[in-house]
Length: 214
Image (cartoon, rainbow, N blue to C red; front, side, top):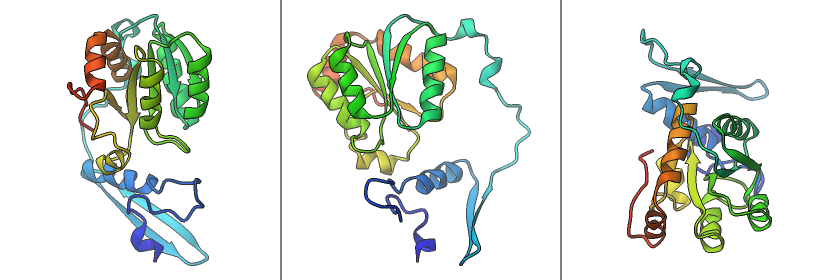
Protein backbone atom coordinates (compact mmCIF):
# COMPACT_ATOMS: atom_id res chain seq x y z
CA UNK A 1 0.00 0.00 0.00
CA UNK A 2 2.80 2.43 0.87
CA UNK A 3 4.34 1.92 -2.55
CA UNK A 4 1.38 3.62 -4.21
CA UNK A 5 1.59 6.64 -1.90
CA UNK A 6 5.37 7.21 -1.88
CA UNK A 7 5.18 10.50 -3.78
CA UNK A 8 2.00 11.92 -2.28
CA UNK A 9 2.58 15.16 -0.33
CA UNK A 10 2.38 14.80 3.48
CA UNK A 11 2.32 10.98 3.40
CA UNK A 12 4.72 9.57 6.00
CA UNK A 13 5.19 6.37 7.99
CA UNK A 14 7.07 8.23 10.73
CA UNK A 15 5.57 9.17 14.06
CA UNK A 16 3.88 12.48 14.80
CA UNK A 17 6.34 15.37 14.61
CA UNK A 18 9.13 13.21 13.14
CA UNK A 19 8.50 13.69 9.46
CA UNK A 20 6.69 16.03 7.09
CA UNK A 21 6.03 13.52 4.32
CA UNK A 22 7.40 15.96 1.77
CA UNK A 23 10.86 14.60 0.97
CA UNK A 24 9.89 12.19 -1.81
CA UNK A 25 7.14 14.51 -3.08
CA UNK A 26 9.68 17.30 -3.45
CA UNK A 27 12.21 15.02 -5.13
CA UNK A 28 9.55 13.79 -7.55
CA UNK A 29 8.56 17.36 -8.39
CA UNK A 30 12.12 18.55 -9.01
CA UNK A 31 13.02 15.52 -11.13
CA UNK A 32 9.86 15.73 -13.26
CA UNK A 33 10.25 19.50 -13.73
CA UNK A 34 13.75 18.77 -15.05
CA UNK A 35 12.34 16.39 -17.66
CA UNK A 36 13.40 13.27 -15.78
CA UNK A 37 11.76 10.32 -14.05
CA UNK A 38 12.06 8.50 -10.71
CA UNK A 39 11.12 4.84 -10.29
CA UNK A 40 10.73 2.63 -7.22
CA UNK A 41 11.81 -0.98 -6.87
CA UNK A 42 10.85 -2.62 -3.59
CA UNK A 43 10.78 -6.16 -2.22
CA UNK A 44 9.67 -7.36 1.19
CA UNK A 45 12.65 -8.07 3.49
CA UNK A 46 15.02 -7.08 0.68
CA UNK A 47 14.83 -3.27 0.68
CA UNK A 48 13.87 -0.44 -1.62
CA UNK A 49 15.77 1.15 -4.49
CA UNK A 50 14.99 4.48 -6.13
CA UNK A 51 16.35 5.02 -9.64
CA UNK A 52 16.53 8.54 -11.01
CA UNK A 53 16.70 9.23 -14.74
CA UNK A 54 17.66 12.71 -15.98
CA UNK A 55 18.02 14.06 -19.54
CA UNK A 56 21.53 14.04 -20.92
CA UNK A 57 23.01 17.38 -21.94
CA UNK A 58 26.22 18.53 -23.59
CA UNK A 59 26.00 21.98 -22.04
CA UNK A 60 28.93 23.02 -19.88
CA UNK A 61 28.06 23.55 -16.19
CA UNK A 62 28.36 27.05 -14.76
CA UNK A 63 29.98 26.17 -11.44
CA UNK A 64 29.45 28.79 -8.71
CA UNK A 65 33.06 28.21 -7.61
CA UNK A 66 34.30 29.69 -10.90
CA UNK A 67 32.76 33.08 -10.10
CA UNK A 68 35.02 35.87 -8.98
CA UNK A 69 34.25 36.64 -5.31
CA UNK A 70 34.39 40.38 -6.08
CA UNK A 71 31.35 39.97 -8.34
CA UNK A 72 29.16 38.81 -5.47
CA UNK A 73 27.20 41.49 -3.59
CA UNK A 74 28.60 42.26 -0.15
CA UNK A 75 27.40 43.96 3.01
CA UNK A 76 27.99 44.45 6.71
CA UNK A 77 24.48 44.11 8.12
CA UNK A 78 23.45 41.61 10.80
CA UNK A 79 21.64 38.48 9.59
CA UNK A 80 20.05 35.57 11.44
CA UNK A 81 19.92 32.29 9.48
CA UNK A 82 17.20 29.86 10.64
CA UNK A 83 17.46 26.41 9.04
CA UNK A 84 16.92 22.95 10.55
CA UNK A 85 19.09 21.19 7.94
CA UNK A 86 22.70 21.49 9.20
CA UNK A 87 24.37 21.30 5.78
CA UNK A 88 22.17 24.02 4.27
CA UNK A 89 22.52 26.23 7.34
CA UNK A 90 26.30 25.89 7.37
CA UNK A 91 26.52 26.71 3.67
CA UNK A 92 24.31 29.80 3.94
CA UNK A 93 26.21 31.08 6.98
CA UNK A 94 29.57 30.53 5.25
CA UNK A 95 28.51 32.35 2.07
CA UNK A 96 27.09 35.30 3.98
CA UNK A 97 30.07 35.64 6.31
CA UNK A 98 32.45 35.56 3.36
CA UNK A 99 30.37 38.37 1.90
CA UNK A 100 31.03 40.54 4.96
CA UNK A 101 27.78 40.09 6.90
CA UNK A 102 27.54 39.59 10.67
CA UNK A 103 25.77 36.25 10.88
CA UNK A 104 24.19 34.27 13.69
CA UNK A 105 22.46 30.95 13.19
CA UNK A 106 19.63 28.90 14.68
CA UNK A 107 18.35 25.38 13.99
CA UNK A 108 14.69 26.12 14.78
CA UNK A 109 12.17 28.92 15.15
CA UNK A 110 12.05 28.87 18.96
CA UNK A 111 15.82 29.36 19.24
CA UNK A 112 15.54 32.11 16.67
CA UNK A 113 12.87 33.95 18.66
CA UNK A 114 15.04 33.76 21.77
CA UNK A 115 17.98 35.27 19.86
CA UNK A 116 15.71 37.97 18.46
CA UNK A 117 14.55 38.88 21.99
CA UNK A 118 18.07 38.92 23.47
CA UNK A 119 20.11 40.51 20.67
CA UNK A 120 20.15 43.86 18.99
CA UNK A 121 17.60 43.92 16.15
CA UNK A 122 18.79 41.96 13.10
CA UNK A 123 18.64 43.69 9.76
CA UNK A 124 17.44 40.47 8.11
CA UNK A 125 16.19 37.03 9.10
CA UNK A 126 16.74 34.33 6.47
CA UNK A 127 14.52 31.38 7.36
CA UNK A 128 13.48 28.04 5.92
CA UNK A 129 9.73 27.67 5.38
CA UNK A 130 9.09 24.09 6.49
CA UNK A 131 10.63 23.22 9.88
CA UNK A 132 9.55 21.07 12.85
CA UNK A 133 7.40 22.63 15.60
CA UNK A 134 7.06 26.09 14.02
CA UNK A 135 7.15 26.96 10.33
CA UNK A 136 9.12 29.79 8.81
CA UNK A 137 5.85 31.54 7.96
CA UNK A 138 4.76 31.46 11.63
CA UNK A 139 8.20 32.73 12.62
CA UNK A 140 7.86 35.51 10.07
CA UNK A 141 4.55 36.59 11.65
CA UNK A 142 6.17 36.67 15.10
CA UNK A 143 9.07 38.77 13.82
CA UNK A 144 6.74 41.24 12.14
CA UNK A 145 4.93 41.83 15.43
CA UNK A 146 8.06 42.04 17.61
CA UNK A 147 10.61 43.65 15.28
CA UNK A 148 8.71 45.60 12.61
CA UNK A 149 11.88 46.92 10.95
CA UNK A 150 13.59 43.53 10.67
CA UNK A 151 13.27 42.24 7.13
CA UNK A 152 12.48 38.58 6.41
CA UNK A 153 13.51 36.37 3.51
CA UNK A 154 11.89 32.95 3.26
CA UNK A 155 13.61 30.04 1.50
CA UNK A 156 12.45 26.57 0.51
CA UNK A 157 13.03 23.76 -1.95
CA UNK A 158 9.51 22.39 -1.67
CA UNK A 159 6.86 22.46 -4.37
CA UNK A 160 4.05 25.00 -4.71
CA UNK A 161 1.59 22.56 -3.09
CA UNK A 162 3.71 22.28 0.05
CA UNK A 163 4.25 26.04 0.22
CA UNK A 164 0.55 26.71 -0.25
CA UNK A 165 -0.19 24.31 2.62
CA UNK A 166 1.97 26.49 4.87
CA UNK A 167 0.33 29.71 3.69
CA UNK A 168 3.37 31.10 1.88
CA UNK A 169 1.79 31.49 -1.55
CA UNK A 170 -1.14 33.34 0.02
CA UNK A 171 1.14 36.05 1.37
CA UNK A 172 3.22 38.73 -0.30
CA UNK A 173 6.67 37.81 1.00
CA UNK A 174 10.24 37.82 -0.25
CA UNK A 175 11.24 34.29 -1.28
CA UNK A 176 14.39 32.41 -2.33
CA UNK A 177 14.18 29.01 -3.97
CA UNK A 178 16.52 26.21 -2.86
CA UNK A 179 18.96 24.98 -3.96
CA UNK A 180 20.70 28.30 -4.51
CA UNK A 181 24.16 29.36 -5.64
CA UNK A 182 26.32 31.85 -3.71
CA UNK A 183 25.44 34.49 -6.29
CA UNK A 184 21.70 33.84 -6.01
CA UNK A 185 21.80 33.98 -2.23
CA UNK A 186 23.90 37.12 -1.92
CA UNK A 187 21.98 38.98 -4.63
CA UNK A 188 18.59 38.17 -3.13
CA UNK A 189 19.78 39.10 0.36
CA UNK A 190 21.14 42.40 -0.98
CA UNK A 191 17.89 43.11 -2.84
CA UNK A 192 15.79 42.56 0.29
CA UNK A 193 18.11 44.62 2.49
CA UNK A 194 18.13 47.48 0.00
CA UNK A 195 14.34 47.56 -0.29
CA UNK A 196 12.94 50.66 1.50
CA UNK A 197 11.21 50.12 4.83
CA UNK A 198 8.03 51.58 3.37
CA UNK A 199 7.97 48.63 0.97
CA UNK A 200 8.29 46.24 3.91
CA UNK A 201 5.38 47.85 5.80
CA UNK A 202 3.17 47.77 2.70
CA UNK A 203 4.01 44.12 2.17
CA UNK A 204 2.91 43.34 5.73
CA UNK A 205 -0.39 45.08 5.22
CA UNK A 206 -1.05 43.09 2.06
CA UNK A 207 -0.82 46.07 -0.32
CA UNK A 208 2.41 45.20 -2.10
CA UNK A 209 3.65 42.01 -3.74
CA UNK A 210 7.20 40.73 -3.85
CA UNK A 211 6.95 36.95 -4.09
CA UNK A 212 9.40 35.30 -6.46
CA UNK A 213 8.07 32.41 -8.52
CA UNK A 214 9.10 28.95 -7.29
